[in-house]
Image 1 (cartoon, rainbow, N blue to C red):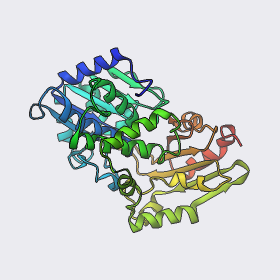
Image 2 (tube, rainbow, N blue to C red):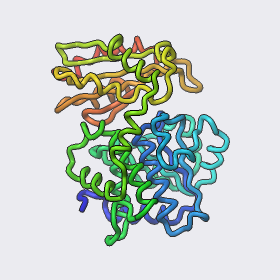
Image 3 (cartoon, rainbow, N blue to C red):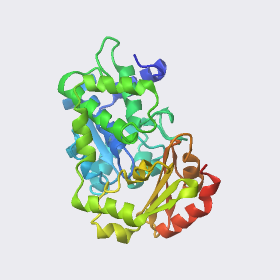
Image 4 (cartoon, rainbow, N blue to C red):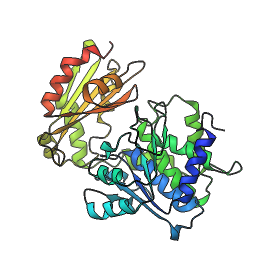
Length: 361
């Protein structure tokens, strides 16, 4: 039995929204990761298989702002995901026709980039499920728990609350449908906790994992598909980061890795190729903080490059405060992120000027 699930009255309101909707759009954030894709596809399979409106009468679309990594393309349902940057008119039409928008793994419409205007302009009900701090006030119903390991965990808890008390498993679905839901949700749990190495101390999390396994997931196969499918370019890029680009600051138990656009092009960078690199320096016994910066081209309508900044730490050493105050981001104590508008060199200079105020030795 899971504890600390959502309030029953809140779950009942969510159920009413889901039961009434016939044209649903599911959104997730720019640069979709395992949690974004896992929660979105888990929700997709749940909606087309478990609600009182028959699948043939209900339209459910998953829309992501830009392309998701190739190492997530095996996930059930990923072939039907719509990419706003590639299909802007078709995506905008689906959003305009929606009578319910479900927003997963982001706390503000600006996190979905070019899709934000379509979301905001549609006045239909909106359901937000997210685990990041300080959610914006734009949704009809907001399920926000920053202490959760992932959005997939929150979706699991919601499905558990929506299921009949005599139903089996997280979603109440058996067979192939339940297995697809469990596979997607486990992928998000696994990736957003670094394979359960951080943000994963709540015992309830492992009760969720146990129920997902009972639904028939292939846990080891999921790990292999996510972490052991690197291309040659990705492997060489990883080696370059560790050998050429990693700077150590032993007095502060800190590692910093930066990559410019030019460096990424040398290795034929694809979305997701740098996933997990930020965690690698923490394998050294005397490194407690790791920071990774990746430069990318300007967003549409802007002129400055964007630097994605990822923070990781071990133990009782917060990084979310610096991520929020210096890089306009946030996240969990041990795993956070932010952005800087400018060059990666300027972002690194800002970090080196400010980090001693935020990082404990």
